Amino acid sequence: MSRIAIIPGDGIGVEVTREAARVLEAARDAFGLDLSLETYDMGAERYLRDGVTITEDEFRTLSDDADAILLGALGDPRVPGQVHARDILLGLRFRLDLYVNYRPCVLLDPRFCPLREAEGRTIDLDIFRENTEGLYVNAGGVLREGTPHEVATQEMINTRHGVERIVRAAFEHAQRHGRGRVTLVDKANAMPIAGGLWRRTFTEVAEAFPGIETDTMYVDAMAMDLVRRPERYQVIVTSNLFGDILSDLAAEITGGLGLAPSANVHPCRHALFEPVHGSAPDIAGQGKANPIGAVRCVALLLEHLGHGAAAAAVDAAVRRTVADGVLTPDLGGAASTEQVGAHVADAVRGAAPAANAV
Ligand code: ATP
Image (cartoon, rainbow, N blue to C red; front, side, top):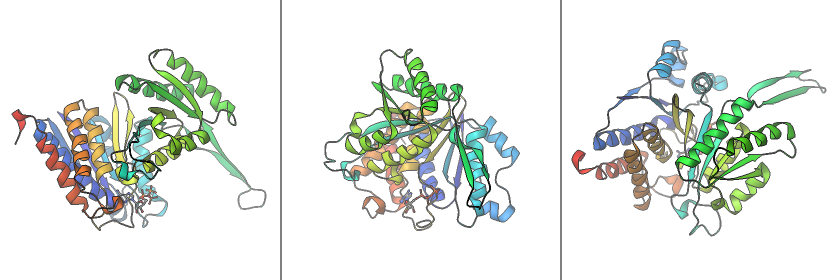
């Protein structure tokens, strides 16, 4: 049996996770999967009520017992400094050493693409963002704060170990999914110290994958190219900061935050799936949030657990729902979060193998 921990979190995280869980249950029943789902009360409400973010016991259960974690979103304007989000999400990311941030960006329908001549474009690229190092480790310091002579340093940490493992994860993914090219994105012209490590490591790791073409791009050129000819890219591997920015750009050209899923993974150990969007307090509680990003996380989660047919059924059900025009307002539709979730779940049930059909 696989144990799945569900953390709905805050704001629209709660709404979209309800629909993701509905789809997961539909896949479980339709495909006869042995899955147990357990929901965890972690988020702003609990923090404001009890002053608790995540306990050591909860951390241990998530770390030792859960085969996968499905998270909605964390973030609430009532919590100063978003301390709960830091403890829970960054806590899990760093303590479980989830070094791969995987973001598939697929254009499901040309209508969702804001680029010119969207019709006929095929955007289908996978971003591998390093998730535990780079500029986000918060190394550095401030001198003479608040004076005209203030000095602020924010250091970028790159280790051979950290770079090698994310680069290898990108190549292994390319090999597994029949992707022909991996592109390294950096800024090796202006940042040659970090760039040198990334490029040497990339070249060395690539030697073990002779069937896969390689390519390097500066991040500024990549930002332009993702707008100009995104169909050229298959797998992109990059550092924490560049991956953060490029994956939002890639999400936008494929329909926006509401559609985009992500996985935070330590291969063969831990995996946490979350939609790319945040808790969106401006639309929370109105039934308007697009649940597709969260639902596509379910497909990634099922694939991660080895349930390829069920994952493909969820993916096909999302495409069916889009084709049927059952869309939330962010995509120009009038459907509610729940209506979209229910439509996807029905389509998953319809895809059940005959032996398990209910
Ligand atoms: P965070 O700091 O947690 O990333 P944020 O407020 O900066 O959060 P999001 O919460 O991701 O950013 O959302 C930005 C805006 O995009 C929201 O205010 C909302 O209007 C829109 N948005 C985000 N996710 C969705 C969604 N699933 N469905 C519809 N609109 C969304």
